[in-house]
Length: 311
Image (cartoon, rainbow, N blue to C red):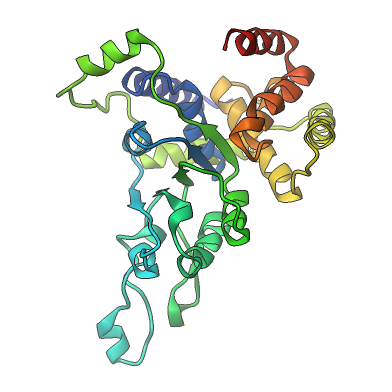
């Protein structure tokens, strides 16, 4: 690890701590947001509205020095609300292009709230942006977008084939619930009127350095073997297959997990990211976690079992 990386990792750790003090009972989601930014991937937050999902993602974006685009989707949402309007002066000159700079193709972090309420006309071109971070700008052809991570939220898992295609491309899944403890509710009320300080924030340039460093993290062969084993166990236990796209993307997230731990290579503990990747419905989450932790951490499985009994 270079001398440049150490201080940046310290900053990243402090940002994670600060966000968790401001967005309560969301430690896993905070980690997921950072994993997505470092790995260039995506996540979806499932659960009722009013759980600070937008604030959580925008707060992380601000502390990381990244531009943020968010929109509340509905069946009436039109493509130009996501990708920008047609450039009229250019059209008058015979060129078709879009004024996308202040819309999704021009931002670093994207958040689509209630994404599965949008219609297919809007969602189909969005698939490319989510997966490839690219956009077709009319006569200018395909452009590379400055997308670092894509996030979405919904109160339900989709069943429509078109919507399921979008859901599959949102790699990590988190079930977000209302605050559970009285202590958290007291802290929530105490924060009324307080500003969210950006102390210890990273710059976009520093985030770029961390993202490039993430790509260099070694993946030892035994970890690959363990990941294959976990994938097969999920498929055997749950009765469905994880796509090759999802399996391969898991290693990007494992590298990011190693970076958050301050390590220089992926370890078996990082294979636990399959607990975010391996379920399709909220009811499956606990079983998938048990399958994953059974191979990576017997202690976590035991604790999880006790928690299920308590619930």
